[in-house]
Length: 248
Image (cartoon, rainbow, N blue to C red; front, side, top):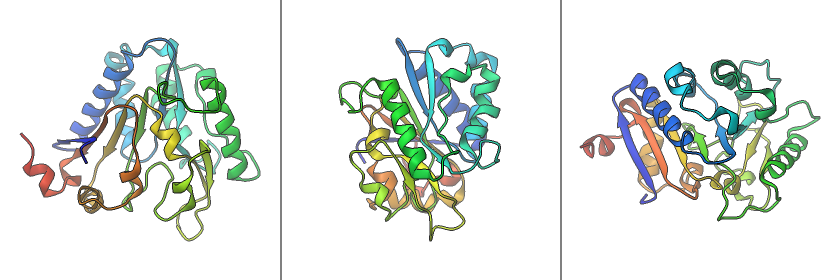
């Protein structure tokens, strides 16, 4: 766990405030054209709303940032389950981000595997190569949540997508993982190509899986790495006793 740093916040409100401040602090230092990889889910909404407030929005170099997504459900963007739809409504539209700088994962293909190939091509086009260079990360910041089973993005325990080393995005067959719909996810190598990574985790239902992670369990979240620091912000409800006891 030496490559991960955990910070425990008192409650969900403090978590959202700290996460938004951390995101703004990273992005305001981006030099040249930058890229952010967004996430979805219930916890991130409050973070997006705080980040879109004028005081933090003013710190973001919006004219130099492109916005991508770590995963997506294979549903239309109008569907309330869409990560892109959530991000547009809570963050990107309030910030006034031009459509050309928002790179949503396509979900209008015949199947998620085709969508994954299209999105990988979009990423490679932005990056300028179809091979990732460890010295030149794809993203400046990757945002992630944590599933109660230890999944990150749409990389679930025991699924073939976890073993992918060459492709940047894959279609994820969620048969047997009900109630999940089919998804598209960035792979571990693509997520790892980032200068910084931030996990944002809240709620008592996440406490057992964080305890497993701290104990060394081989969960998808345990396999995530990046080129720079990996910070975990968790609220008190999600924090195992060992994390709370370690607080200064």
